Length: 304
Length: 314
Ligand SMILES: Nc1ncnc2c1ncn2[C@@H]1O[C@H](COP(=O)(O)OP(=O)(O)O)[C@@H](O)[C@H]1O
Ligand SMILES: [Mg+2]
Image (cartoon, rainbow over all chains, first blue to last red; front, top):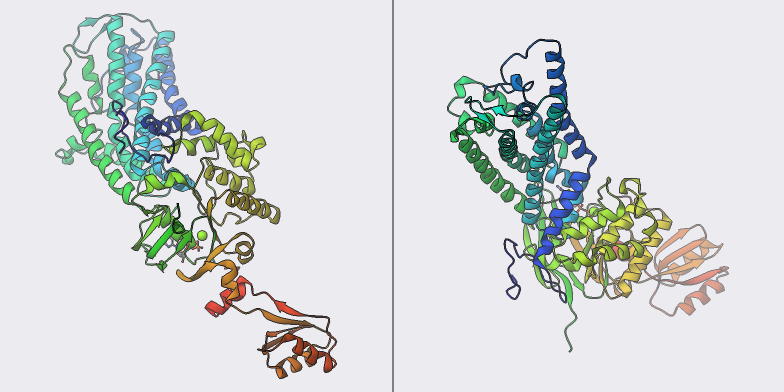
């Protein structure tokens, strides 16, 4: 490694020095920039984001029509003890954000992550572009880290797309204002907005586990489609197993088990127990499947 | 400063057995001198691509070792590969990106490539392969020849010390082949070492200074192209309407392996002055239209070395 260059904060210095010119360690981030641009310019990515943006619109319109008829929304969240946010939407459009996140977190969001993560390495292998990235040379660890960072960026963007779409629709169709927490206390709209942002970040972080799993699957095969299908299949399987009482002992280790704990951020005071467990599980999945992906990808024969 | 002639690629007993059990490369000892245009010749399935994958660090050798630009591969991939441009098993592109954006992406993948000069270098590479006009088109709309040229452009994004080109003319029409070959000659004349794999004998003969011949994963021979062929004697060719009589006379004169095809009689030249052989033909009343020795081709060398024909169709 180059000793005569200042080590920039957080910048890993890697790569060979060219015979004549100096190699700037920051150049290593060129790949991340390219990866982000490539991912977010893809038609497929935009289609996934469009589907996610459509969910709050549909929910908002449905609620508006239901209540417009004079009926009242039945209580009960989407599933598994989920919060009863939906009944509050007509009072306050901000609740559409919580409702939409609760509605997309069990399936739509992780499915979109599964598509992006599953395709990350396998898709490049499938197209043959992987070998050219590697002889560029992208470096296997660097490429994997770049792919992981991009998948995380997609988790965040996807969640924010749902939240912002919900906020816009909520503001257009329903009144905004002070809101009541699950514990019954009143908080200002500004604080409610702050909590909504925090919830969006927690929801995005809840997807880290699926992202790591998908990336690992992606290093196992040369078929992007197979990797995507496997990841989404695992997602559905885990969601089903999480409902079976006999598997009680295993369930705390499922990446989706504490997903709906984000609702605890709407309590006063905030109930942190399950939130922390959720983030812990996500960290565990990231560590385990991240290492597995690294071990696999750095030793694998690239013949595609 | 005098140095021994540099070796750009050196392998020792390089061996690859794929997971399926297929022994694709078997104890390969290859030496590619700096500045050469090195032809890596072999029929389909003879292990050329497998060798190149090992040289580029894409797959791990089962046994043996490989050095590229003096450094061990795949261990030194990060140091070596920025100096190497490669086209492996045909081009691979992002169909949804334009030709230019494809190159920008591949360049961004190289951590030693200066982003400040990226656009200029991409433009220069596009220009070099004649794709400037099509640079903004989506790569999926490119013809095979254009894809191949874009792949070459990716190999030319930086000044390289070595170009590894795996069957770069595969699937192209004669015009496309000519274009790529003249581009390769041009690149080689700049002093870049070119390692060119091909299953086409005439391609290697036309373009290369050195060659190695592979068959079924084994190295048959390697060396200077002219010497490989020179090791095999040329054939005596007589063109005449009196082919039968000519064949009889040639045998009489000590020529071996006499073959008659229509009005062409070929044979291994006897160990005597060919002027006398010609005189004998004329004296016997053979009407000679043409008389001469054909230079041995690489194909003759291949046949002589392997005892079998070069199966071009593979
Ligand atoms: N990924 C692979 N897995 C198993 N066998 C392979 C693989 N790639 C190539 N082979 C086999 O290895 C041998 C050499 O192939 P290859 O190196 O592609 O030859 P060439 O490039 O000279 O046509 C062939 O018999 C081929 O079938
Ligand atoms: Mg091949």
